[in-house]
Length: 97
Image (tube, rainbow, N blue to C red; front, side, top):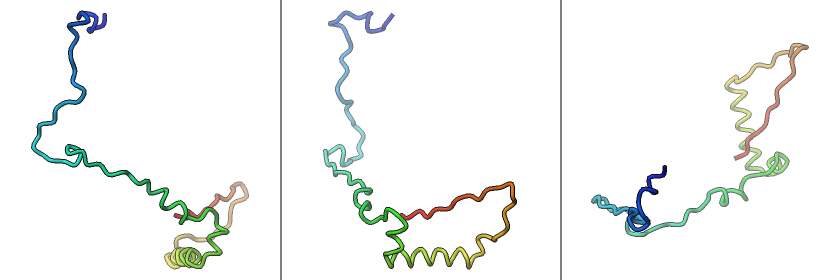
């Protein structure tokens, strides 16, 4: 049986819409000061390239990719070895952000 069913319609509990906040900290929300949120993806959408073809035509992106690749080579990140005949190679992609 529902607990509210025990009360008559006139005896139901009155719950305030919003509890009263009495702590002494003053916040912007307490005073109703709200700033609109700006979604950063809207700001960055036109700056991020959509494909590697567009990246390779832009000199600043190309130099960034080249310096990243040079760092991988300089740090001996990988060693090129032969692939066994029973295995397949894995793919590799650039994350352009």
